[in-house]
Length: 108
Image (cartoon, rainbow, N blue to C red; front, side):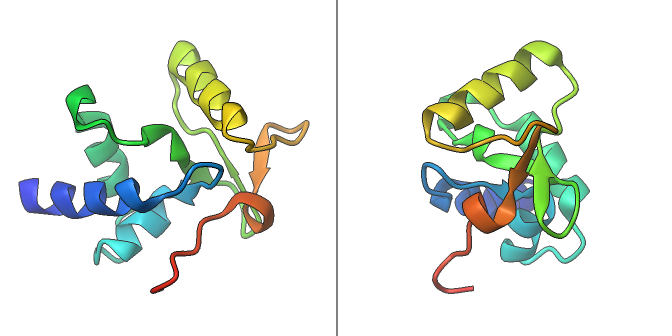
């Protein structure tokens, strides 16, 4: 499991400020097809000292929208605050436009 998590963390480190990636996308880029839940577990297990931009990983809501998937309201509010500080806009529904803020790595 540690090797999988390291691959996920390597992808997360590449997400630039002002952009988001979904758990499923992170997993796919880490070579784990259909591994969104694995990516979620890896993010929950990530130690703070890694300094990962954890707030840039979000849940997919539709083909065009994503949203904060953290259930803890304090952590979810913190994630939103960090994303907004980087220029990520939230719709009234609380979703994020993947067309506007979705990350597409140049090598994908």
